[in-house]
Image (cartoon, rainbow, N blue to C red; front, side, top):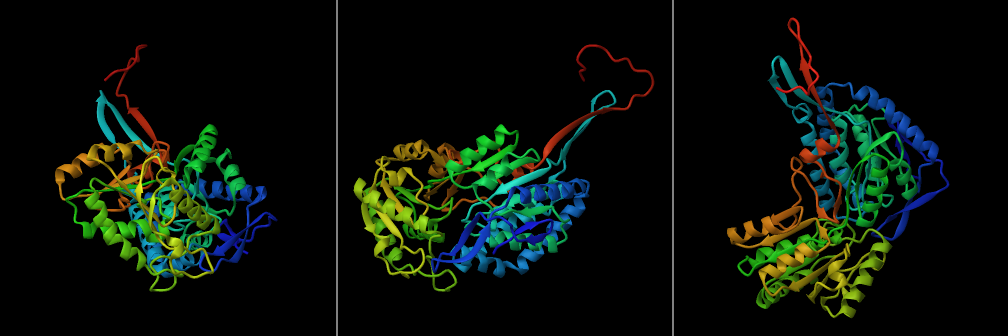
Length: 492
């Protein structure tokens, strides 16, 4: 029975409404998960409110020291966190560790709280008048995180929320919630005041209760576009500040002048790493000539067939299981759709050798895909790669820009001119040049465009500081002698 984390300690939930946590490598239930009751939600909010009241008055040095201690404990416990991720998500141990490190980057960024929360000061904007800004807290913030990155995404959220003086309530995915509990343990071991971070287990009922609660001031979400839209509309209609990140269909354009060995190797990892369950995976490759497409297929096909499939805790495994039976069924469904739509199934993952227990499937490769096909339009979120043969560069750009999702795009080329043009013209939030997965480092901002993101600010980096704080501007004057205040608008 997995607990919540309320007021600095693990608490077994009292609800009869429960979920099940599976080991994707075996298909077996390993935990029961009671969902938070209304009373437990109110208790968590009260604890967070009390903690935030005092925390907001802490010095920036105190907040920075907490993050330094937290970062130290994350480094010490990376293997333990990775084991939990592998057990409940299915990622290989190496991939799990890498995702934790990308989360730690943001904790390192948060260690610079005294510098990040500095604002501006203008002396003498008028006679004896100064103007300056303060970045101040919001209050209680909520983060709803996805199953595919149970450590990285939370670490992209609450370290910045906390250094801005807020308290944070984390609602992790009910599919792999144990990592969130260990992260909370480590934050409190680092010295966080009780109640500053809460972990509430739950489903849509718990989410809706949190995002509409009057004590909650900001909501951050990462998941599917359908849910992102619901959360954005619901939370914003209740007066919350909201950032909601949704689905993706990231494109990779391989130019004829590209190093095809390098491009094929990069595409292989970006398409099939984490079994394709990344919002920044590459499920689509565009080429401008049949010779380039054929050469890529010749390189990719044998490499795909050589991928070792098995449990994530096996050092030889490259392709672990999908996270749930529902995810597996979705991939199987789209393989059937692609064949019916007329795409050429070069590699059929259903025919690969993999364990019969658990949620396994091999990697698949479609060629001769067209923009009208559902396997191109929809996010499959599995180990399925589609190759499209565009007639020319302008058409390739148009296909990318016309797609409803705009998370990431990459180009492989040796031409600086083409790379510059591509980066400037694609309607995409994150672009890679000879980089297949262009996830920004922690001190830059992550965020997609179009139906991949709702709200004005991205995750981590400078946008993260802006999202979790509000700017107050102060104009001050200390009069010397007699002053006359007029009735017209004051000017400098």
